[in-house]
Amino acid sequence: MNTTIEKQNNNVVKVDIEIPAKDAAAYYNNAARKLAQYVNIPGFRKGKAPRNIVEQNIGEDRIKNEALETALPGIFAEVIKENNFDIVAQPYVESFDYNLGDGLKITAKIELRPEVTLGKYKGLTLEIDEYKTPEDALDKAVNEMLEQYAELSVVTDRKTVNTDIIVFDFEGFSNGEKIEHGDAKNFTLDLGNSTFIPGFAEQLVDRELGKEFEIEVKFPETYHEKKLAGQPATFKCTINEIKTRVLPELNDEFAQKVSQFKTVDELKADVQEYLNTKKADTDRVNSEKAIFERVTSDAKVDIQPSMIERETDELVNEYKQKLAAQGFTWEQALEAHGEEDIMKQLREDAEIRVKNSLVIDKIAKLENISITQEDFTSKLVELSQMYQIDPQTMAKQLTQTPGVLNALSQQALNEKVTKFLAENNTVKLK
Image 1 (cartoon, helix red, strand yellow):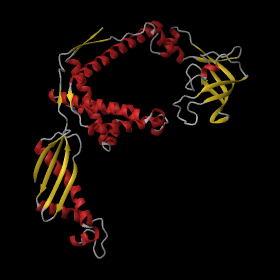
Image 2 (cartoon, one colour; image 1 turned 180 degrees about the horizontal axis):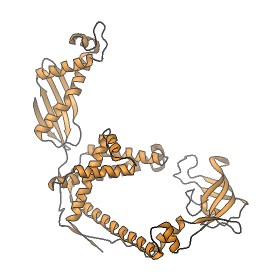
Image 3 (cartoon, one colour; image 1 turned 60 degrees about the vertical axis):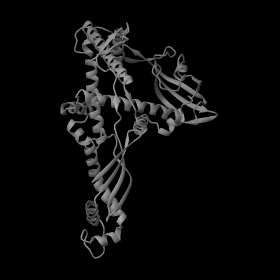
Image 4 (tube, one colour; image 1 turned 90 degrees about the vertical axis):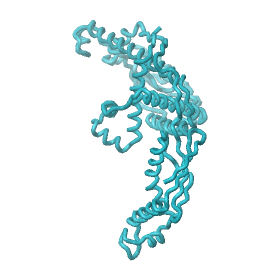
């Protein structure tokens, strides 16, 4: 096999490959024998028809395409190894000339990893703002615990307040028409934590039991149902029941009920320890982020547009999955926010992602940082715990999705490089 390499723009090389006639014929004959196994030819058992009969039934072009599909992975692997290419995508064939008498000529393009020029990435000293735990954080945390164990008590002698939970009937109308699925009977709503249309829950405050009333609202411009987006609406409402939260008393008995501690002081000390740990973790994460952003901003790399486009496609798929999990579609997102704005943001995110990945790989190479089996197993266990699947089953499932395996390995490498940068640079909290 003879190859001619020509460097082109955007980290792409053009490769002209010449395969001798003997090898090209062998590829062709193997492909013909393989295809003969799946073709019914009258008068012959499968796989037993001579080559010329197989050619008459399925054609030379199909055999040549099969031969190329089978041979190209090995051909490209040899070219990559001989030239020590660091590729970022699978090579692709631009053209080929397959003549059994003259051999096989292939012109292919191969994308190479962009060269990364790092700035200073060790011995840096940075300053960042220290995370400040709010002064009332302990009181809020304890109060949240009390609210978790609050009991609901029915109220009959007053109007609603904004901390109540109500049971009510409602029926909605917009532009003179009844809103489809805009009504309910005995619907329970927490007035202090409502996900209804803005302004809806607020107008249910200071209302009496059993009396019908109307409220006026306006659907958001970005509302998922196009017919209602930005439209005014009227809801007829009747409150059937008012409930208020009754918090338990904060005493030693409560501490023993909700924890392993015997006293309120011990419980508060544990909550304070959690808040201190949260502060330390926040400062650590912010420090690591500051270091990494400094290192990547100082790095120089010429990223080819094709890498950004592929990463953008990946982000689009991730975005669609997140939308689906929330009950929305890609089309609804485009309609609400505009395709141009969404794609612009995703391309910017994709460029950041690609550059970050390239910088991480460069540092890992320079510092001999690699992923061990232990590192990979640790990430596998984390993933299995997230999806509540045992690690062995998770490992079997991942063998069917190489992309997830690669992402898992890359994540493990990211964490090791991030840890290396944190250990070799200094961040001062101010």
